[in-house]
Amino acid sequence: MTEVVVVDSPDSASSLAAELILSKVRTKPALRLGVATGATPVSLYRRMAVLAKQFGIDLGELQAYALDEYVGLEPGSPQSFRHFLEEHFIEVLGLDSNCLVVPSGDVGTIATAGDHFEKAIRDTGGIDCQILGIGSNGHIGFNEPGSSLGSRTRVKTLTENTRRDNAAYFSQPEDVPVHCISQGIGTILEARALVMLAFGDKKAEAVASAVEGPISASCPASAIQLHPHATVILDEGAASRLEQLRYYKFVWENKPDWQSWRLS
Ligand code: F6R
Image (cartoon, rainbow, N blue to C red; front, side, top):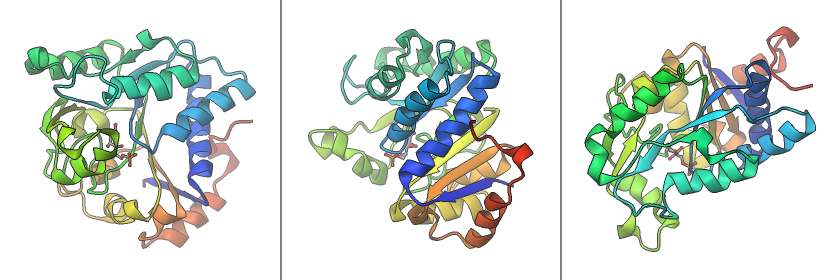
């Protein structure tokens, strides 16, 4: 069963997710971490920095793999996901930028960029833990509705919905690229563990479809139900449409100590 954890605020959710990830770094300092961009994981990365310091967890061997990138932005563009991750992940956690691998959105090499990125993941032994957000249309990475559940890293065309959701990062909505390169759903499912975060009512419907709906390309995030180690950490707003909400809370309250990933 997908582990669903519902807490009172985005801050508590970020804290819990940070504990889950850092408990994995404790066991495996050279953890391969899949990192997401967007508003959702920003406080998670900040919380990881605070807790790593507090618990003396060394992040120096961490390797990071981005989920996706826009295609066709100028190199170094502040809207690129590489730039976002340099600012909100690498700098916040005091890491070396060489530890971060991002699929290339350079138009000149785009035909081979997906294979190249997949090889980089394979060559280091695969991603241990993949952080995910969820789009209001149910996308994970930039796997828009209709994406193949077995897909690998490749170029995708963004939906109008996603371009609108991401317009705030650009000076005008038309500047949001039409194309992106994204880890496929098949790629994401190969990570050894998945940690999905979602906050606010705006995500409630997508979350309910992902966790309780049928597994379907119409809601790409529903593919996480196929994963043996998927944890979904939500605030009350994002959890508000879940039918089994009371049960998930009961499971969490009665989680045995020996199954816990809390830091101490
Ligand atoms: C980010 C990504 C997307 C976002 C999703 C939610 O790398 O691939 O799937 O996780 O669009 O975005 P926010 O967090 O901005 O609501």
